[in-house]
Amino acid sequence: MKILLAPAETKNEGGINRPLGKENFKFHELFPFQEEILKRYEKHIHSLNLEKLSQWFGLKNLKEVEKYQQSLYTQPMMKAIQRYNGVAFDALDYATLPAKAQHYIDDSVIVFSNLFGVLSASDLIPNYKYKQGAKLPEVVVEKYYNENISSFLDEHLGEEILDLRAGFYEKFYQPKHAKVLTFKFIKEGKVVSHWAKHYRGKLLRQIVLHNIQNFSEFMSVEFDELKLLEIQEKKNVKLLILDIV
Image (cartoon, rainbow, N blue to C red; front, side, top):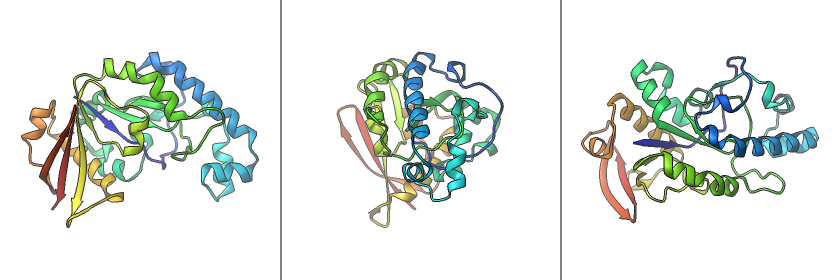
């Protein structure tokens, strides 16, 4: 069972000094596509003045903008699962997990990225800024990745995929053959949006602590603060509606 996760716009700084190259990535076969987008990204950010770049990044602090002008190829690297620090990643709290649970994540979690397309949790990446939905010239990034990585992922992710991504990242990849579990979180009868990120991270933490290996094991576990209300099924996808209690 593989687990798909969305990224976060906020990231941790620092890391280890290591060149950015295909050796940093689990899926070596996909690096040429990632490198194509990286080249377009760097060309674009170096073509803009600070004011326009601040708009593209969605940043008001010009010192922050200057920091992200530096080439990604010269930056320190960090595991993708530790680089991101948004709501879901705070709830997951990777650093406090036991070594066995961390290894589970490194091996089984796939993080989608506006810049890199698809990452294994253990892939080493630099700190970067790429606002969701921002456009690069002459390429629609999510469409480019969808066209170039989908067949590979269908072949390599296995028969069961637990999808914890936000809906936007379905534009990068939708499993065609695997059985898929997706989730909707309800509180007091209403669908939660922002806090859904928190519960995705919390759910992932419980999955790895229980060492859940397949859908059958997943369905047999009672998760803290979550109660199954309904299952909706369409083709190869089951939507689990979970009540936050």
